[in-house]
Image 1 (cartoon, rainbow, N blue to C red):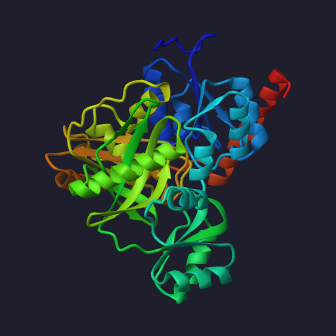
Image 2: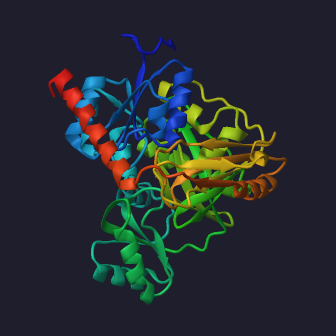
Length: 419
């Protein structure tokens, strides 16, 4: 493997489609190997924008805007880091000879819960909960009666748990319908799932480099409203359950193909393992690997993309606690106590330019002799973190200025490139 210098005619270039906190860590790992990083997102000054060689703001669900940028930048690798991307643009880019990680069809299957569930259950024959797809409230009522209560209701396309809820009776369906319609993504179709009475759920990070498939230690996690708040590694599993989890992860990632890291989400009840979802990119619960492993999930992702060896060492049990903003601000400030910066813990602040209630702004990472002790520390020390701001502008004014800045950038590009 040769590693040319960035910003040269022969540089190795990656394009991140999505530049949040996960993309930021991917960008940092890529730069450690001298790769040139181009970060793209729908809003300016996204976390990965702040550490990339080049940053762009576009509508990533607009096929023409995505494809136009790909053709101008000409990246060696395109790394989709979020679900809200024009899949047509990715297929077109692939047809034109660009490399999409892991591949456009894998992104297409996993960005839509209908696609991935039908693929896993009907094509691969994996064990999943019972499910139905609906496009109207009347169909939702019928599906819920068939599946039984409680049932889980989610948009087929959304991210970070947005729009997900549990209906425990017919009377709660109206609320679940409303929650789904407010999701970030496409709520025109919903999936209604059987509520599996599982003992726990895990993320099994699975990396493929085209030569081998490796698994990280399973990651346990707690969720609230479909979004993770705590994770820990390793999650205890019986040898039988762990073996079955790896079998499922291997089968689904081989079925999807391509290179990179995959976050395979599984439900576990005793020794039985159920497939839930899979993300063809670093997983938010996997931020715990920043403190537990010699190679984090982000480093493994870059290694896998480049076809490099995937060897790593598991160093220590650890835990992560997501910090979510408690207020809306265009000048967010994260405040911490000194106890956060101990020999066995540290904080990663994402640097998001705006906060709103519930937005993930930072992550606290801890290590200990056991995962339970690390989790206890994480839950305690995240209480030392808070957000506040001295507001100098209104949210509306700041957003208007950002939109004007984006328009100026687009006009400059149009002047320079004639597009």
